[in-house]
Image: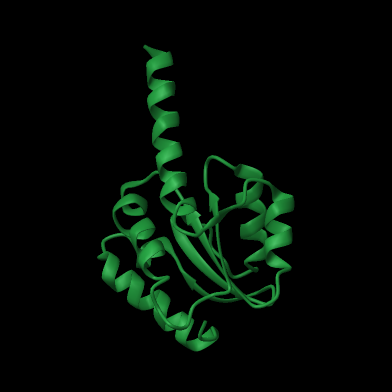
Length: 146
């Protein structure tokens, strides 16, 4: 029974990952990969992924749809809370002292500095369209038209 549960859980994790990676997000699974991503010039949207319902029903769909905007980040990346623990811890450290860890969440970085954040409490209980609208507002403020 435990083996079936582990296989089912791993299948669910893979689905959560692929929803983003198949739609333009680069998955960062190590602390070194996060460090490299933060050093990229321009803007980078970090999506802190998770297995919770608000990630699957709101955050991941919003993450994918938010890319359909004339102004958008140069890079889209993701870390997976609870799965890639070192990568997630590194990302949260680099998000700054004011960052309160939550998942799912989004952090927009510009030239290695966090400039905007959408934490879990602004995702959970909201609809995907309002999350997209918030993200695109950040894109309008900090990103260039691509």
